[in-house]
Length: 135
Image (cartoon, rainbow, N blue to C red; front, top):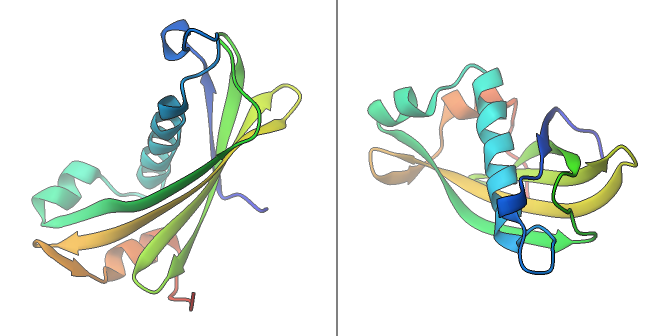
């Protein structure tokens, strides 16, 4: 897959469970942080958007766990984005560094809510470089 953004991380010990591997819920945190960093790089600010009545809301998440991360591991979360109807679909993969083995594959669907209503946002479409595609 071609990626348009990536964010590096390191596993903190408190993110691991009794088995010594990253607790499954933390992968969502990693992916969310990478999406937020991506959104900053395209010139958007969540607080500003919210103050103008524009919110992006996650509507669905699918995560396939391939290999576990452990405390102290370095890794990178890479993403791409496409639009399907009114949904923004973030395709996010997490790779362990330095061997670049795939640890997690995620698909996060988000929608725009403008002034409390599910809507199409031309501003988000433009910033994300998305055009509407069929599912």
